[in-house]
Image (cartoon, rainbow, N blue to C red; front, side, top):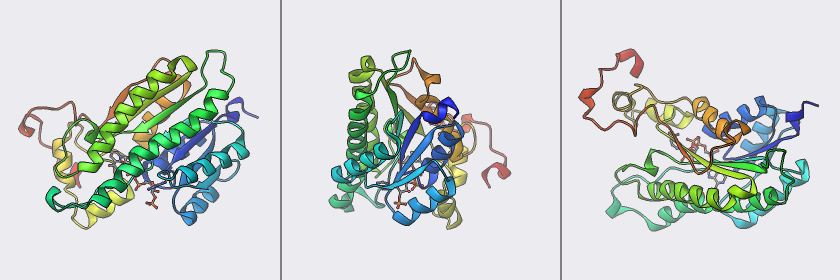
Length: 271
Ligand code: NDP
């Protein structure tokens, strides 16, 4: 067996979007992959599509019991976890802050922030017991931030709080576990062309042209481009990187001038 095939990656929210792109990249890297997601049909369909030796496990990352059962299932199948990607997420409620609903606020925080905490905690318990490799590494965790981790998106209150919180937690856990051989980093994507975004574009509910004009690289990201950064940070290729937040946003957060400072975007790029 390929020596790398021994390694195991867990990806939450792995049945769709960035998570699915990341699952496929880990598999290409030679890792055995456990994709965790909410919907049983979606999990089974993706696990079948991936084939052996990979597995799909139903999990609600916001539930402590569900996370414990899912990580136990991964351990029973594979016996180790080398990389975790905390990707599961949901969008924020629409509408003005004054009309927003507190249950929806709590759910966004529960999935993103509590979920990232719970799965990291459960996986770290496994990693901390593992025998380190020759370089002292026991594993790595990559969390999903956002441009909302660092700059303001009007009315995206819970989402912004969760994504800023994930960056804070990334640094706290990175600092705690560095000498145990566990690295913890985050990627902070800009707008990504997932199936949901394509559908919103089709309905005219998303200003794709506006996003392209405001992005120095003049387009949204493809899910595979985010996956590439996740795999880098999660693998040993990033062996000296911990506590970092890597923007994968086409220059969105680097850019601070009026939009007119950017050269106009060719119309076909926005299409
Ligand atoms: P998708 O909606 O395409 O995929 C998210 C997956 O997570 C879905 O399969 C979803 O299942 C699952 N999920 C939702 N809630 C839970 C839960 N409680 N437990 C387990 N799985 C769950 O999202 P994206 O690929 O767009 O986003 C992935 C991550 O990247 C998120 O954290 C998001 O905030 C972040 N991100 C995305 C950006 C974008 O432009 N797309 C930009 C910046 C960050 P179901 O479909 O059944 O709800």
